[in-house]
Length: 453
Ligand SMILES: C[S@@+](CC[C@H](N)C(=O)[O-])C[C@H]1O[C@@H](n2cnc3c(N)ncnc32)[C@H](O)[C@@H]1O
Ligand code: SF4
Image (cartoon, rainbow, N blue to C red):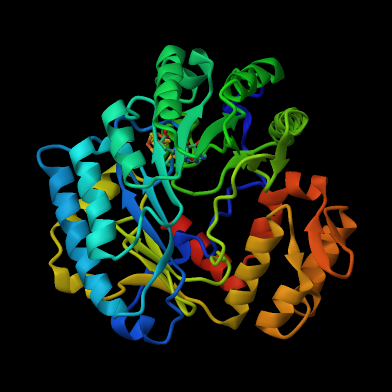
């Protein structure tokens, strides 16, 4: 059975992927424009993660709400790299001597929208300006099939990329069209061949389920086509139609973020989720989270000494976030194409001095730090060890989140063996309802205010 996106009208508890908390729509202008030097002065800086954001794509896919624009007219990519270089210099200055990077990633958008020469420059910025030793740390890069050309892949492999993540979404051309992601299966297969030839230790493939017209049979067909390449990782994303995206406009969603939905749609999505999960488990993959699966014999990808719940992040480029323990900050955020273009134009015009301050962000107090820790651990299949929570917050998770955890347990979504709090398989399936349930009232209302803007 397929349920047309048009059928989704009522509010659903399954809203979105909680990949970072608090969400950027809860960030606000920081009137005091704090200096990065002061923000980072007392932070642990020996295992930072570095993220460089490239906000360009060849197309704007119908489901996509990421911070990215179509194409780069004139010399925009050069101007963007110039601005990245200025920002990197200013941020490096603010970090002082102590900063050391334990992981790095180029994301987007589509980093491989840049030419091979531009990718070389991007790596130079990460290494020479920021001091990241790209060949010594895990380096992940996102790519699309059309832009995964041999010359670009060669640069990335030579500079130390350990993981190449390819957005495919569907191996069925008609489904790709329906998701407004024009691509041909033959081109996807050639891109996969080029990526395997370049010998990155890890190939990740992104697929989407819940596309209009997709059935359990066609979903399994895409999974099998992906499995034929024995990717070390697979991400299975549910399709949520969001306002201001191509599909959102088509289905008449307004400016609100969050999705419209109805129970039949949620049921269909969960059915495809279970089919996908069971298929991958039967083919030697281990589930890491609701979306992520890793081949049982694949090399681990995180640096030994990096923990996403606690360690700092430096994001460069507009659209990138940075995290200290007390403040998350970024440049401005938008989904609407026109606004995105304005923000990028503003970014490339900024002098170096502007990059020494945080302009937009959200303060993280102790309550938010606890929520973030709980969210990020609980939504992983391995769960939250009591000891890790106690070490950081000197209490048990239930001391701070008793009612929420009891609610999840009552629904059969959560188990606690006294050592680890862990989602059940059913709980993992409902991750997208669990995440938002743990947001603080303040973050919830800031997000709602952004949505009404
Ligand atoms: C930055 S793209 C990956 C690289 C490249 N831009 C591409 O699309 O091939 C991010 C990935 O997030 C996934 N995704 C899931 N939900 C999404 C959403 N609502 N908006 C954008 N991307 C989404 C897609 O599977 C997509 O491949
Ligand atoms: S899914 Fe990837 S290629 Fe498509 S618009 Fe989003 S970032 Fe660009």
